[in-house]
Length: 471
Image (cartoon, rainbow, N blue to C red; front, side):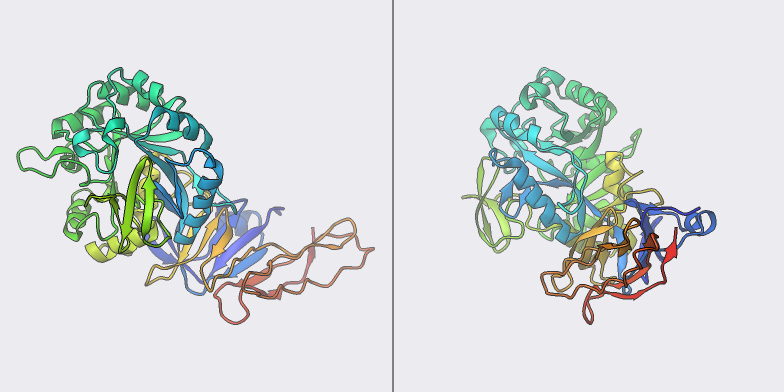
């Protein structure tokens, strides 16, 4: 059985699958990971495009569930150009291997939520940028004693439970995570209501005891926001929220951790990793200054200053988000904990997908999953290129932007209708299209193209075309 959709084979690569790195081809069709056994034995088909990966490592695309902005955009501040700002960050994140993310709004006033939250829509990724999974609402229902960079005058208690939440945010249609402090009045009722709506609820910016944390988990919490930061430190008589990592709980507890080399000491990373390895989720907590030089910026209504690539609340020594993207967090985690390469990658892919309940389509390279992945140098873990639905909007190799399409012939008049491999900004030459078929043959021709994206020689141009066949 022949299949009309384009089939792409990624060859000469290592892939991360089932917690193992194996040397195996990756097959993609219709934006999904394809099963090669079905291709070979059921369909008896062959690849339309073969991509030579030149020994690169292919991992699922990174998923960042806590990011405040980037490239000058703060998700909590600009209420005029919301869509443009979010799309700008979504595009920028592809450079760091991030294919899905949760735009995060910090503590703000009701007016800001009403103007911004309805306009950050959940959106499938593509050439325009990474997938928007939903908004992470961090505050204002947090404890002033652990407010961090959040403004005290805007912090509230959820005294009326879920009603307090909806009164503040309005519609929760675009939300996916809500972070709150479980010890606040009405918090447990709010957690139950949010969980019933299908949202993920996280605890954070809190002075909760372990027993209060356990009660929150039983009410519906499954996440801890940036472990160790903005919570009580571990104490041997009451370990607080940190103790949830070793508590006897009815379900897996996940916890975000900022592995940027500044927020969390390497020893703390090792403790967390060894105590609850399956729950660790790398988050960037990146701010508007991501990708920009030192200077004055904002996080929501709060002014901040970036010095020596470190962000602080203006006029204080309080850390204010991170300047590291998620790919750097992966590298720091591996170096700091000496964990396996597979584990470091899954902490930014599989673990967040499981926490959000989307592991059936994101966070893995399993057959049928979305073909969102990142090509990495197998040793340095530097991002080579990022792919969404099997297409690459970006390649970081010598700044080339590669767009792979298939050379084809129109079945009605046999004129070439697509001449793929758009010329990149670096001036790489477009390939020569196959010879035109005679106008009277009235056949549709499919060609197999072999593509080299290694960046050597002339760049991403096809090196061979197969003979056409009629279908």
